[in-house]
Length: 148
Image 1 (tube, one colour):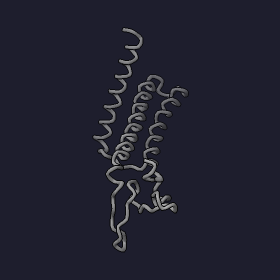
Image 2: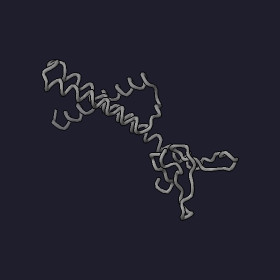
Image 3: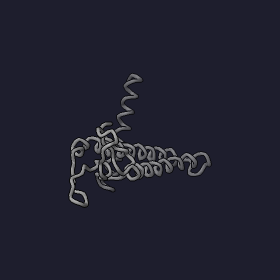
Image 4: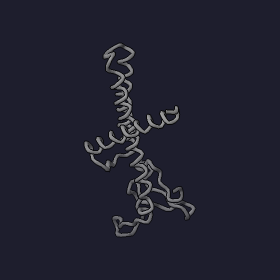
C-alpha cells in the first residue's frame, strides 16, 4: 500500500472513531444540545484538560503503560466535542434565514423583529438602513442581518 493510501486509511479510521464518539455523546446527552458558545468552550477545555492530564502522567511516570490509550481516547473526545460545537454553530447559522423575518409582539402590543440568536429586540441603526440586536450585552453573537 502506498504511503498516501495508508495515511488516508488511517484518517478514515480516526474519523470513524470520532463519529462513534459523537454517537455516544448524543446517546448520553441528547441532540440537539443548545449551549451557548461560551459553555461549549468550557466543555472543550475540560476535555482538553483530561488529555493534558494523560500527558502529565506520561511525564511523571504514573500509569506508564496506560497513558497512550487514555490519551488517544481523550483526544477523540476533544475532537468529538469540537465537532458537536461546530455542528450546533452551523445548524444555527443555517436556520437564520427562517428567523431573520421573525416578528413578535412586544410588551405594548407593537410588532418587533426578534434577534435570531438571543431573541432580543432588533433595532434600526442611526443610519436608518441597517439593523442590529438591541441587547449587545446579552447577545455575544453581535447579530446584524447585514453581515449574514
